[in-house]
Length: 379
Image (tube, rainbow, N blue to C red):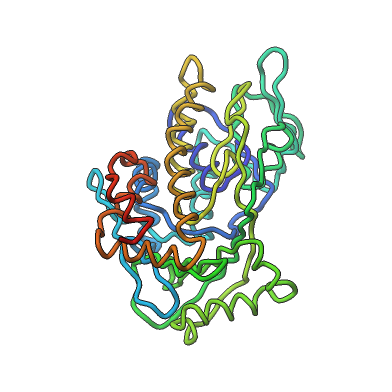
């Protein structure tokens, strides 16, 4: 296993639960922080529970997420509750620093896992006998299977020749954390402006993660003044933060749209963001990574693990990517956002259904032709 973020750590833990002996390499030391949406959508709670980690995350103060509020600056937002499915409704706000630390601790104490942080994996290949080899800073390791989970800009995916993208229009994220003297707000809030959105949600420690999701044309504003311009935009579009305190650093990440020409071949598998990432507007990244990790571990016992994982990966990502593309199309201009808000006020179930499609609960046929027309026209 290469990479010990949420997707890689979960893949290692699921594989160990299935009886595999696992080695995990990550070039970073832990705990470590990383720019991230930090929302675990409801579809990610079952795999978290299956790993025995849900109680630890809850006891660490992860607040509930009830749904998404969409709005324009200075306007009343609309609430889109998460759909209920199999008794699951609420997501969780997960501070990435603490979540990664819990996962690393679990890796380090598992009897079937050998965890090697601060050990870079430099290459991976499969020989003529079908044995995979990982070349690390500490030497070579031979394995039956290798999962690559080294993130959005996966160096190993690139070395394998599997990288597709990034595809324009390029989008970037600028992420920081704030604290304010106020009750926990259990909603993910997305405020749209021309060329960007302010995405915010609660995490542990009475903090709110606030990210700017920006198109490339606005990134020039941040040249040489990342933190100050970030603060200006957040407080202008979300006046509630004028009395809040920003804590910790401001980080930037992107561009987002990377895909892979294949996610499994010759005993090598891509998991999480390394396997392709469209855009964080749906906040499905962590949940999708956990579900892919479970699918990877389940495929290892198959007579054709690469094929089974490719099929499972497609099922897990096809509709969520379409939902992300649709939301990006709707959010490209404030006028389209206004139409979507009007449509929601007339038929409030449509966007909730769309979230359910993104979570993998059901297909697009859940949304009627009339609802599609209303969503795009506002009438």
